[in-house]
Image 1 (cartoon, helix red, strand yellow):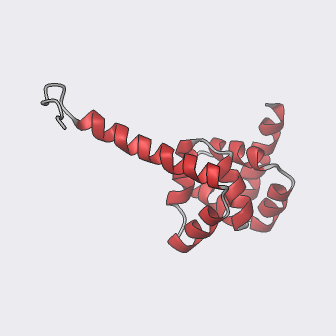
Image 2 (tube, one colour):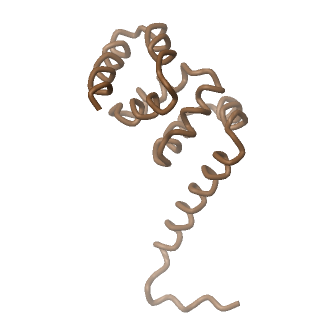
Length: 124
């Protein structure tokens, strides 16, 4: 926990200064899980997207694999389609299946929430 308390202000300072090269150098010193945690603690989507966009597709894929579903969705949403395709291509098959499944489950849950309680039962 203390490590992130030191890294997060450092990352924010680098972002505020506009020094993307220094942000990238910091990212190179971290494991994908650490990057995922730092991204989850950044306050806004633009900052998360900026940091995530500095990663090579392979590294971005590893960070996605270590991220929570809300962060995966947030990071992917901010990418241009070609970049999104590159990152997803580098994910492991199991992690990609988990990501797709969690997104489908989330969408399905939202749809189920829209059905009124007094709706007729669905019959085969």
